[in-house]
Length: 563
Ligand code: ATP
Ligand code: MG
Image (cartoon, rainbow, N blue to C red; front, side, top):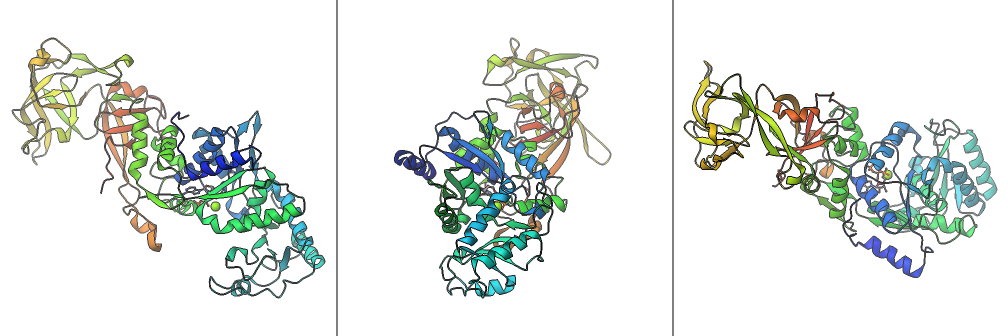
């Protein structure tokens, strides 16, 4: 866990205030309430870090609760993926050996009973209008709504109808249960919101037990109260729902279902990250229409995708800490996420050499049957971690861009007649080039200076400006390396109702056949490395085999997002 000081924010200020006034009897219980209708994304990480972070810092607990009241869209696969993602981020929902893992679907009986109580007390009624008629009477922001002709049904009639709804006597859409609040309220959420609807749908946990399902607003506040949540943190779009949250709980408290202190809803701004979409529905579309290769495609901002891409849990927590929590929506630049990864990995990742765009370099005066080891630090700033070694031989791979037949002005790398140092190896001088009939460059020839080897006495007598990396051709590990770019070409892919598919970047994934320092061949899935000059890479967990790692580039060494 991060040990940096906890950033202050308005939510912590509100909790501090409650602690001082003892409003919640000193308790801090939060919850993270995903609907299992897709995989979690980077936006959810913000909510996870906030809820679990607050619970941890106040000595409380954060519940993981599946808000599973839409049977058509939910599944066990999604439940499992969410459990995996929260664990992977480093958070736990257990306290004193109690697992605080909950499902709103476990509350169906209680929710049903609460609805009967509201009906008995005159706070809910069965409406039998069509949904179009209901919408027509709802009014607008400027015009009040009109009461439903069914609004004054007696409690007995409502109770009877509601029980028959549950018993499966009616078709979908024939009736709904509505709260009886205020059709003239300036807040549309209070104009008799629907609490239950009829759905003949199979639920992944409750099967066919139910044919009526509770609505989100109704379920959420009651679930919070049942779990004795103290602070229910949610995103800003629920601000206008808070009066309904409070109304439902207050009515049930009057009926002694709940005792104060009741949970308090506090809203914060959702995370918007540019060049990606953070909506489960849109991510689902990308996956199902096969624009990407699955929920864990490294191009996706899902937590599974970020993990496979190589992001560390620590880098995501660091990111969430840096973006903070505010009350106004804003867009965060992708570079902030990438910088968090660099800052996390810089001190951790061992270094190695990779040639991503290979060009053959032949050292004519080096014997063909000879090779020798060169050494380099595992980490340039941590000599205590020791060294790595790799062979030098007559034929090497160098980076194509490190050679220029006609060097531009100020070019210090290899060109005919010029000398460079082969990093951690010898100084060489370019003598000639080899081309095919069409004029394509096949190889570069050079001579080396036997007394110039890095680390040996006198090697410093060679003063050269260029220092290029290389791997020995016969010894290198030939690997598949994936380089990634932004998934969308537009900063806000779904802005102003644009179809985000029209701005998909077809080149967001590029495959290269690279030559790597031999030592990386034994790296394990999810191990990370910095390939010098190229960035941070991870061993792909899905496509690698023992001794045949496939690498994903997580981020380059420098910010490439600048406009
Ligand atoms: P989506 O629109 O992607 O489906 P959601 O809000 O419907 O997201 P939920 O599963 O209901 O997804 O979200 C669980 C929790 O995560 C909620 O408390 C929600 O407010 C929060 N959350 C979702 N997206 C973001 C985001 N972009 N930034 C911060 N919190 C988020
Ligand atoms: Mg939601």
